[in-house]
Amino acid sequence: MIKEFRLPDLGEGLTESEILSWKVAVGDTVTLNQVIAEVETAKAVVELPSPFAGVITALHEEPGTIVEVGKPIVSFEVADDGGASPSELAPAGVAPAGAATAVAGTAKREPNLVGYGAVVESSGRPVRRARTFTTPVVEQVRTETPVVEPVETRSADTAERPRSTPPVRKLARDLGVELATVAGTGAGGLITREDVRNFVGGELSAPVRHLSAVSDSVSHAGLAAQGGREVRTPIKGVRKFTAAAMVASAFTAPHATEFLTVDVTPAMNLLAKLKTSRAFAGYKLTPLTLVAKAVLIALRRNPSLNSRWEEASQEIVQFNYVNLGIAAATPRGLTVPNIKDADTFSLLELSEALTGLTETARAGKTAPADLSGGTISITNIGVFGIDAGTPILNPGEAAILAMGAVRRMPWEFQDAVALRQVMTLSLSFDHRLVDGEQGSRFLADVGAILAEPGMVLTMV
Image (spheres, rainbow, N blue to C red):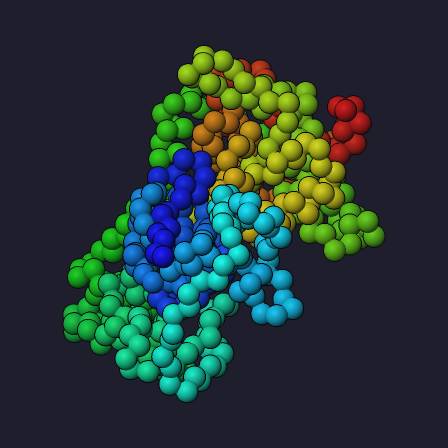
């Protein structure tokens, strides 16, 4: 029997997603909850698990296509009784991830990455489609991409799309290149980045080829593909979501921004000592770790900055917990994942959470749930060598703190001028929720902790 899998809502009411890559092909036999595709929502890249155990009969959408929630994206051939359980399709002696023992005659939900478990209706086996191959030659292809799938050499009568990795397919889409027209020079005929760039380079006209203002091949390719002196990129994914959120925030919440420049030499000295401490061995401690902890402590005395303006109910919601958002610059754009209940974390736990959060965000693997529900945010513009700015509030939050670069500069110290480590803090807040006095007190508390960490003893 043929069953269709429709694109589910991947969280937070998202209405569409882009198919980045398929991890399967027509004719492949898949197990329940096996990853079959990688899709990009407005917030994150998500691996899509299979809701059935069976054989892929059709892929309805090509990589690069934006699909609305509820639209069919893949069809499966499964057994009439609902398909086999994961354990039946796994090699002997190997229990697949997510497999569970089902009670006879009882439907059971299996967990998956989307949030909805597929229902295992029985333990019947799917009908497997015969696949025609020449003598299979399977080799591991080494390219510049970290994750590479095995390449199978198939007979001519088994049609398939050109062999390439997801990043190469994305590059081809961006440059307007049809991969079927590109000859692959990689092992087994794999199409590489260089193949795509060289293909476009060969199509460049003489005037474009000799533009002195554009030196690298990617820029040349972009100009050629766009047919002129400008490059147009579709507004989608994280960029589209971020733009809508920032416009809504800027024109809904009345922003006010205050600045405070602080001598953070004592905090930096403390950080240096902690790095040599046995208790923090193996943990990544940065100025952001201390600023985050200072924010969490200061919120105890200034709870109005940890609140939300609820227009529909005409209420101010004050949170008794802190989901601390950290703005992260990623290859996909700006994201603000948050650490749930960060106010309950010790400094060591906070350090570990920050490291995991940023690494996951930069890898594009942040779950949609971790990108929502924040109550206050921090953006570290200091890593770019910037001293101060006027950050825009994350929608639904009352405040955001920007921490600038730590600089060694002349500063008044003990009635003299000394070379000290100085940082500027920039606090933007929603003036409907936070008065100037409250914002100033909060900023002063954060600054006092960084200027003299021992001040914490007077605040808790």
